Image (cartoon, rainbow, N blue to C red; front, side, top):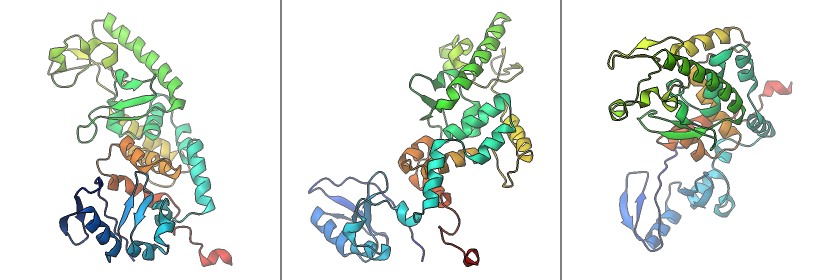
Amino acid sequence: MTLRLITDTFEVPPAAPVRARADLGLRADLGLEAFEQLFANAGCMLAIFDGQTRFVAVNPACARVLGCAPGELVGRSLLDFLHPHDPAAAARRADAAQGWQPGFVELLAAMTGTHQLMAQMLYGTGMRLMECVRLRVKDLDFARGQIVVRAGKGAKDRITIFPESLREPLQKHLAEVLKQHERDLVEGFGNVSLPAGLARKYPNAQREWGWQWVFPSANRSTNSEMGWIGRHHTAETGLQRVMKEALRRTSITKSASCHTLRHSFATHLLEAGVDIRTVQALLGHRNVATTQIYTHVMQKPGLGVKSPVDSI
């Protein structure tokens, strides 16, 4: 049997018209009483969830398929039915909440320096590779414990978490970057490219510390458009190459890339019990359905079913 999940969000004030959207494409304005009758008597599965995918109301058809009475489902999570609970899964979620995953620890041990820090940032914040290399100093908010991701996918800004374990490494890294920037200024350089229009509006901003790249290039380059010599951010290919080489020196057999660290971030947060809407916001997904993909890999294959050969 295939379960098709159709989600929609709409408010239902008392006695106000609501928009009912049925599986067959029916669209009709109904009063609250008519909507309740439709909800109770519909032959298809209907359910209302809160922001944490817990059942608020369930119609009889849905309850029959899930094998429970409607009242027994209220307050339970939909994920309990998509991924049956087992003790081993609970232990894995606890481990995920406490620290790095073993495979990631091994990968980190095979990396050093700035590239190691960048890998920690990808796994610790859920950023995409280009979002990481384009970070500016002012985007790191040490006081509030958050990182602002500028112009992510879809040209949208968002806020993600600031890993506590990376505060000190980032402070040490920025201290070295600041020394490099001050040397550049003394030598007549220190420029960085700015978002469109800002360079003309704020001509001195391109030399200010806050606008500098968190991960600048080791070498200066010429900005052909503006005509000055400064530093671009580090090339994304550098971390890609280092991670590929590091994987060869580990016991990890699965193929992986920098984007795998973002996937691991989402999966491990969900395994630790973090609300799926929170994970959606951290990843910058426009639709929660994209985030729900990660729920399919949270548990071990077979959904906890024991193979007969294991009993021999």
